[in-house]
Image (cartoon, rainbow, N blue to C red; front, top):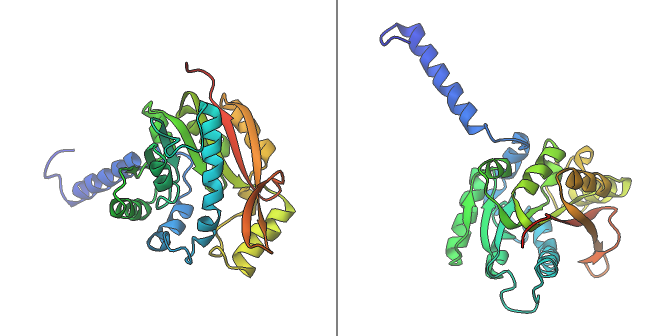
Length: 273
């Protein structure tokens, strides 16, 4: 467009520049739901408050860590009782939020890269990690972008993320592509059952108020069978699940066979040494 072509031309150049900037920013947005990102963006400053809006994640975090540690040690033939069982392993934390899982995995010895599309979440994560003297590579990126760049990790985790993406198959394939040959994918999500509607939405959001209202959409919940099929289509094998159940009497969470509401999953990437 010729220089000095008038105000209309200048406005056209500005509009074109903005369009190209937006296109570049969202080229690898992939399965990110922008409404979901905006919702969690607003919660960023309170993410590390154990009594704040993320208190439900704080309560299940120890259980998730046990599952991750044990699955990683089983897969790579390591002793879960040693001080740094993830030592030497690269870990990719997809949808890391403010780093509730990223930090303990770094403390277990993992070389952690953590992704979240929310700028505020990543800023909060970096501040908290700096306060604890932890070296974590936090990025405002998507797993689709990482996979497209050919980056891989020994262990890829996506905890409480699957139920927030726009397209499960595409998301799982990107996660699988980011797993190094011989590596491991670990997931946590919510089953789509009437019990999950009653407990994870009505109970957790409206009655007990563990989560902000509107955190979950029941229609986006994923059954273990659907998740297994997506993992197998992405070339993963050995899909397995464990349930996470809440005991109201002890007010604590435990691993169980019951996957009717919250469940964890693991799958292996063939190849490697």
